[in-house]
Image 1: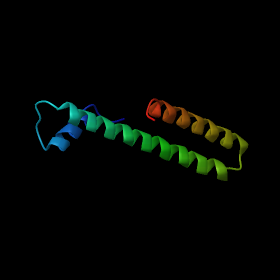
Image 2: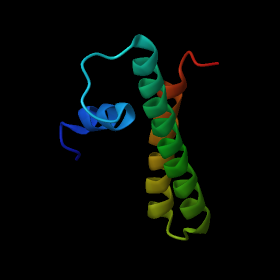
Image 3: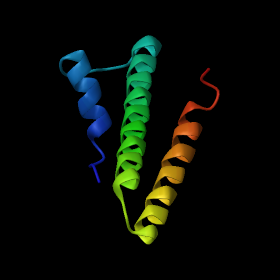
Image 4: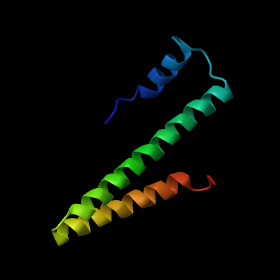
Length: 84
């Protein structure tokens, strides 16, 4: 779990120090970057579970990995909803 100051550190890093207010354009840019990162992370996890499932010989483990793949697919669909 990350600590609560991650957003402030990310904004300070982007602006190069202390900040007073954010422009809507910069705020949108930062939010979109975080959204893209979330999509990349979920896709990576989905691919990892798919590769592991292909190699797995134990049926119970395959079922568990199938559940993990379904969860990743659902999260990815929720992240991409309305983004066509």
